[in-house]
Amino acid sequence: MVIGEMDAAQVAAYFRGKNVLITGATGFLGKVLLEKILRIQPDVRKLFLLVRATDDESARRRVQTEVTGREIFQVLREKHGKGFEDFIEEKVCPLAGDVMYEDFGLDTAKLKEVSKDVDIIVNGAATTNFYERYDVSFDTNVLGAKQICAFANKCTKLKMLLHVSTAYVSGEQEGLILEKPFMMGGTLREGTHLDIESELNLIKHTQIELKANCATDKAERKTMKELGLKRARHFGWPNTYVFTKAMGEMLLGHLRGDLPVVIIRPSIITSLLKEPLPGWMEGVRTIDSVFLGYAKQALKFFLVDPNTIMDSGGHGGKLHDGGHAGALRGTSTDHLPCDIVHEQPGLLHDSPGDGPPLLRGQPAARGERRAHPAEQDALL
Image (cartoon, rainbow, N blue to C red; front, side, top):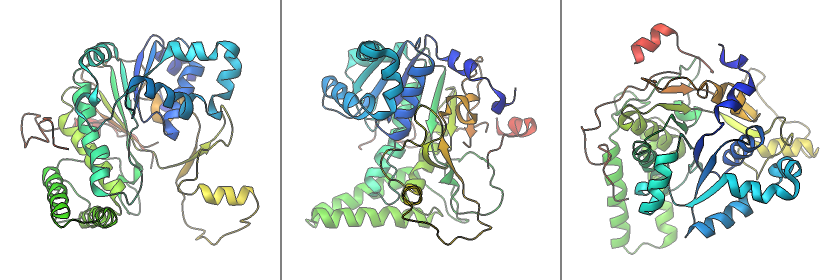
């Protein structure tokens, strides 16, 4: 079946009776995903939301305030009426934790409960600031991917780990760009080799130097931001965000073992396209200010190159379009390859037993295209 022709009902049916762990649920994509699942598949068993908070009660309040209390849940709230809060309480389980910590910082009892129940993990947690501090971006986008992979390997009934990356891990290139997996050590600049362990050590060394020199908070932020940008450009990436997301993909490929992994690489995501609230957006990111200016008639025109192709998209509730549909067919996960979807197959991976501590999975201190079957064989 062609992914684009997949019936939405078939995808919705996949979630019936499933337990799903979602990271990054307080972000834009996380809210859209959560609302979509609850609206089209109310028979989903449980949605675990990993949220940064001091305890589960704080996590619950944060979900109520920042997620289910937002306008995007208006349709769902009207559908359930007075029973909305009871429905949310039955289906949604907030967890206080953080992807950058081993086992997300969950206590033993909670870890055991979640790991034995989870069928699907959607990792949407990320630091998306293009010029974030290198240490902050590395913690979430690189070490976070490592911790997600380690946790997924403890989930006894896991059917899929879906990781949200970005199309811009491909850097600033022109022409047809194939969706190829990143191998460990690979870069976008010829003649360079990327050692993720060395990058972590560089961050630690820089932090030690800053502390020894009694650097101010402002000086520390400036230094760490400049370091991230310098390292990204050294290896051919334009900014710290896409650089660290690329490293996260590398670690997933290296540590996944036999995990069924899907990596989605969306481009610019703007507002909702149709449902539940056409045009809904939250905050002003990337090119949102252009759309808002045009909608309010404050920006009536702007200069562009007419030959330029803008790769952006309204979020159409991607559970039933190309991005997630191919991953959610409910087929057997035996020998399932790692798909890369631009919103396709096989992440080669080295033996998890090789390499330094970070790459062995040990705790550290801190153009839409589907590959031809012949390529799949080569990639696998």
